[in-house]
Length: 409
Image (cartoon, rainbow, N blue to C red; front, side, top):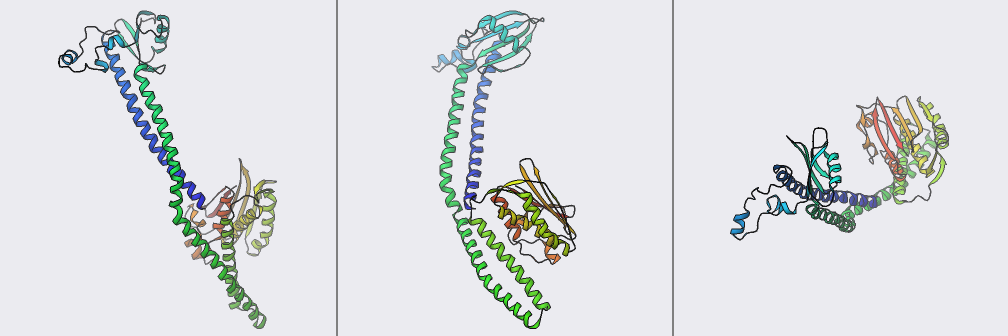
């Protein structure tokens, strides 16, 4: 259990750190690429303002004053060198879709490729194309224009930042994992110590209860032999059996927690085992005036510990027999890759909904306590341990006046 707790702690912490780093990575790179896109759109605005090419007479605010004052000239869309350094082309299409004019300032493609490329973009509005190129589709009296600018130089640093930040996230996760491996041991140490104390208490309590039970039961036999059976000896017998089941449940829990291997996992016929146990319980149900209905799929093979699965079935049937009012139903079938065992019995339940608290040790619901049915509140927790050992799922719910126990193996 402690190892599982450590794994859950590490996985949860790693997912939290990964989510945080992913958000940081996304925000940084989103802002970075947004700035590049915004700058590219400003360059496109200048080209479009010039009718598809840079207007040589267009003023560059701050340029002359900057030089007079000894400052750097403006950069980005207002750079005086932009017209000479920007690689772009503009293709104009008439109403029939024929290219009527091409303004080329890009050496990466020839005129024919530029026209074909612009034709594929003419139905859009604008955005990125071929990763490094920003384009805009615009119209005027001359027709439809497609302007494409090369942003390879501007985008390359952004992609380097993206790669560097992704590598940083990867290294951060590795460092976090190494740190969590050490931290998790210290984090679960108090829980591990408490678990050891709990196991020691359960083991000692089970051992200390066994001897008095044996002595009480022996004295009951003596009293019944000497004086005959009475209401008092019947009550003693009932309580002795209840305490015996409690001790057996505690022993089962300790055994399941101590053994964490699958050496006893073998293939066996679950249908035959279920049919055998249902047959054994048939007389008990009949004697109690209750009906047991079964629907068991044939030749359902399962790989697991047959003894533990047998105990699981025994717990489910005993629970249905003990708490069912008039009848119980057992269904075993294959659903996809799993075998599904469903055991239901009618019961006095207040409302429909999940009842997962029944798997807590020593838990007994208010309805059960009001009914006066004697129980230990531990058998279903043993059932959950068995299912967990086999990598399955177990749940309980109240549905249409029935207590439904569903196991997926």
